[in-house]
Amino acid sequence: MSDVISEKFVRGLPKAELHLHLEGTLEPDLKLKLARRNGVDIGQSTVEDVRATYRFDSLASFLAVYYPAMEVLQTEDDFHDLAAAYFRRAARDGVRRAEVFFDPQAHTARGIPLETVILGYSRAAREASRIGVHADLILCFLRDMSAESAVETLAGALPYKEHFVGVGLDSDERDNPPEKFADVFALAHREGLHVTMHCDIDQIGSVDHIRTALTALGAERLDHGTNIVEDPALVDLVVENRTGLTCCPVSNSFVTEDMKATEIVSLLREGAAVTINSDDPAYFGAYVAENYLQLARVAGLSRDEVAQLARNSIEVSWIDEDERIALLADLDAYLANV
Image 1 (cartoon, one colour):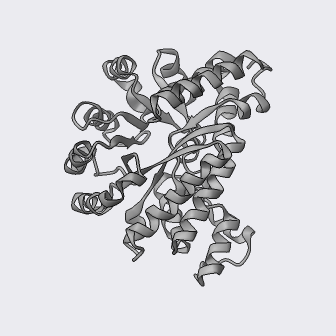
Image 2 (cartoon, helix red, strand yellow):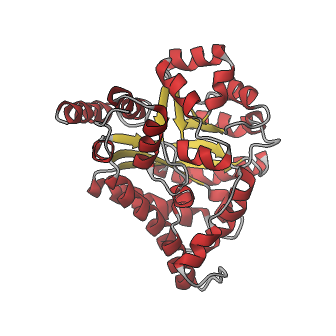
């Protein structure tokens, strides 16, 4: 790896983050603070105790920790404070555009009103512009819940449509293929919302799920999606259409044997619109700049390739065109002066 790819260079690089779960930014100190604020017994009394629970070695074991942690999120201010903490952290990593996931069903299922979730997160997203981060929300459906629940959730959220830019699909992919949610994605398209879908790494039927998402359900981006390398025709399709692939190297290394650097770099070098993101950084211990750095170190990326990852993230973001042009100009100016 060239020595020009320093931490300073990567953190300063103007970039977009497109695969980030707000609930996955719940750092141990904030979790403990919210638990005390709301009188929630989480079974831990120190930050170190909380941090010790953030241990897992598979997607299933991660989700078993991830969802119970959300019990501390109770009020609009709680959701605001969680998102605001992420945006402050992202700004330090050079994130200028953030399109962030949230899981309303994980909260409404435990009695939290939908508007509490949306309005808390949305307030933080609006405020993020003060620190140079242009942010929008993506409402995700939990694929291990029913298709009917997804439709009900979107229908309930539509009165607040001004607060989110698109919809997504996440959580446990086993036995929950994208086509299960055809009705809710059709509704999203009719409502003019953007659409993305998780196609997690090394799942049973991964390539079939990718094909369905791209060709039948109108996905504009794929979250993770690196198993697409198993089907050259699908790779050709995403290259031709400039379909964004929102990859998360560090989280990959927690739930599989490696970060999928070989696949990510192969796709990048074939011209796919690969982007680098942090997924659930409070749990995986790496925000977006660290994901860039670790991938660059493992894969021996050149400075131009690291810059292309940032360029891809801006190009496939759902930002207004004038703002995209301005942000790409900022990226060019940065590259010309470092």
